[in-house]
Image (cartoon, rainbow, N blue to C red):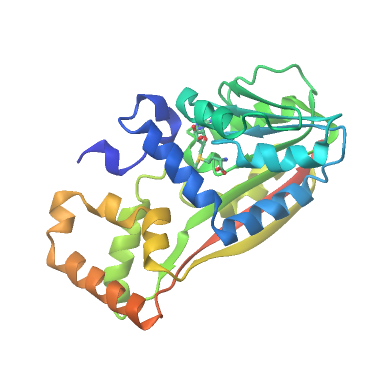
Length: 268
Ligand SMILES: C[S@@+](CC[C@H](N)C(=O)[O-])C[C@H]1O[C@@H](n2cnc3c(N)ncnc32)[C@H](O)[C@@H]1O
């Protein structure tokens, strides 16, 4: 199986399509359900003017820019990401941005900041791809101020559901779409992770991300990209399934949904 169908999120720069990956993030960030859960994550951080905020795994920097309009001229939002290509796009997209922001290349496992450097830290759809969750969370905790806030946003891919007349077949498809995600159920585990890491005042919220348009779901979930793998795209069950989805699209009854969890916690 070619690797290009499944984006390698922990090593974007060494994948064959880093620019395509950056474009994919731009498209997702425009979806209304994404804008909604992301807005909730900023509220939970209780961002105030003058604060220092860090977005780990910031991608193309949309959240960095949005949060910086709250930290204002006297504060700063830093975006850190392990991909140089994605950060280059983030910098292009924020050229001449009117509020203090900075993009830094680095890894969540070894953040280039002193202890207690930030009032709030946000991590959005990064933990699902990480190998060592405990080390990552401990490292993030180290650089948060006392009483500072962490907000984690992650889906639970076990909840991915696509309406179909043949649920067994659809389950095979959703399993295939999500099988390469290292921490598929991370969304449901975030609260426990924060408890283990001894954060206080933990709050958990869940959001339904809905796709009522097959074209948008296709892009967001990578349906045709991932299922373009030869043995699957040629299989009768996949062709039948896709035909059913096209009919549902024409009839206006296509629906796919997945749960996104947002957990807010405070450092002791
Ligand atoms: C699914 S994207 C989410 C991007 C962004 N948070 C958003 O909401 O659009 C995951 C991001 O995490 C970055 N990433 C993956 N592993 C990382 C690590 N160990 N340290 C920092 N960033 C990492 C990837 O380069 C990618 O930009």
